Length: 183
Image (cartoon, rainbow, N blue to C red):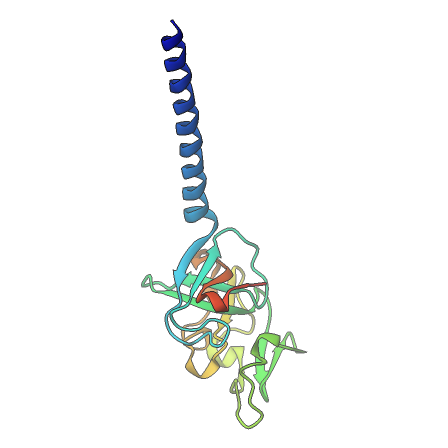
């Protein structure tokens, strides 16, 4: 009788541990595939913020704001990591290395490390001359890399539709000395 009671207690403990393990595994899988997804950064178009072969974690559910770093895919399924520069309904231009949104000059603090007083970082352009549109269409964004001379971005392929955006970069997780939580 005593042995039977001990056996029942042991089975109850095993069942509790099994439930806890399954719940923990479910949480890990949910976080990994739905909340925080790691991805390797290929190329140097986002240097120095995101260096080649570093790893970032992005979250698929986020409100997109100006200067956010996003992950998106093009019509061929190729993935890109770029920075949001222009939002739906805005006009956009660069003159004398200065960003203008709706005619107002706007600072780009994320470019401070890339600026060199002897070199033009972003060549002059008007949105309409690149895209044929005066404003960024509804549900679309204008994106650029931080390393402007090495970036394939909206200046080449046009606007990024809202539906093509996979998520927003949340943090750099590798290399470990470059760990940073992104705004």
